[in-house]
Image 1 (cartoon, rainbow, N blue to C red):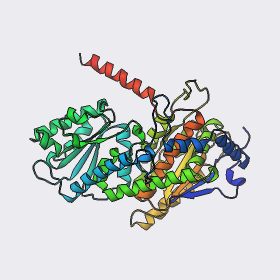
Image 2 (image 1 turned 90 degrees about the vertical axis):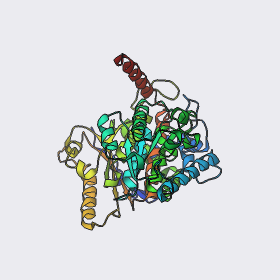
Image 3 (image 1 turned 90 degrees about the horizontal axis):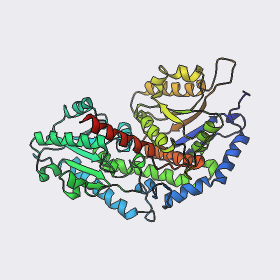
Length: 469
């Protein structure tokens, strides 16, 4: 293979900044001429225009004939689609959260709420879990727990240390038929009942439902006012900004959640207003497309050098792989070329002592986003200095081979977050959402359905029935 060239060798400025984030693409393996070809590709498929059309409410989920308006969940523009509908639900979330946090809202036996259990899986768990891990206080007044998988050990580790009299449960399922969620909800129902919390009125003090199914509360023997709606125009993996975030509003506070939404909205505005060359998510999408198609890189590795961003890796994995893990185009035709990459990673400092050997000297090629925060989220200044020194050193080490061969190589982008706040976290996550849906446009995919996932659920239900006989 001929020697490749870093973009920094042919371009004077390789940094783009917006919303408290700075992206450096100087360690990407392409020339300025290659990059201009990518920009032409984006113009040919109207990359930004189609993304803006999505935000405005055009139907983009062709297989299900739906809009994809997760951006409306965080919009501050009264002209955005469904604005009043979203605002009403957010005000209801805020009202409940303030009542719980102030102690005004009591459990059925008159005790103050100290814990919230998020019962949900997939998009109903990964987004909220990543945000909570990033923004939680060291010793929060209200602790948030995540009951996702149908694993009795997980159930015991959560319920075994909580008091049902001081705990709220939020059951989150768009369809209200997700098997794992419903099974865990049944078990938590029994847990409350064993504590004497049985009547509809008592249960209403302890259980909320987030679902698109209008009969969800009736099925749970709860009053209708305990339901927070989801809508067909928001996919699960894009849903953290809406009622799926109810546990976050309660545990972190409405003000923190509002700042999180504001940061995402600012990134939405950046995407809409900036041209291709200055557009963070468009740049990430184009580089991912290049690395996948041109360099045949089958995987993308996210390496945050900040404990608070540890769980964002799993969130991004679902976001990209469920959206782009397809070989049939939006037009129904089979795509023979490579589409989405596998997404993986880990906390960068730990990963150095785990899989960096494979990244640096293995026989594969990987595209990498390496992330660090300029300002620490703690008082241990020397720890922060050493951590960031590791991050910046590894950004260079991961594109430098000790062997003469250039046959295998990595392509690295770095993302520097000035200070991790609710706003910059919102911008960071929204940036990756836009990157993902833009990639779907470049690949010719529908980012918003998941037919293979639904097929797997169908087989599981059939096998469960057989095993129960």
